[in-house]
Image 1: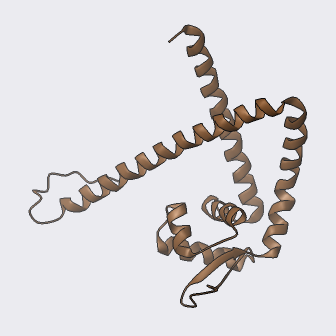
Image 2: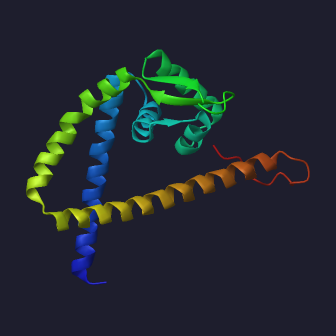
Length: 178
């Protein structure tokens, strides 16, 4: 690899890390202003994007246990940020969606960022450049998701190994993991 490429990749890594930090800071402030935690905020963002989901879908998407999702939904319902309603076809199930009040509060907080981004970026870059940025971000997102799943799988494997340490016939030689 050329030294120019190494330098650019190193700078790109630093810039992406700084961007991720600024997004994390923005999300924490957004969560604070809404009176929720970061997992709750992620749930709200997801519902804002997809409209509605079942608790089971939220559990899978957010990598939370069903008990954690139930507690989260209760908190968000008390804050008038979401509602649980019977599934339109299968009344034994429920779907979760944002309230009108949640839509208004969230958009009031994020629309200045969206408007500023569109105004600033829209005049600085042309369509072809923005398409390249979109491709870069999609590629980077896929890499990020791949490694998030790798870490989850590693953790699941370690947790299963730890559980097996207490089982008869395992020899007990597996160390417990936090």
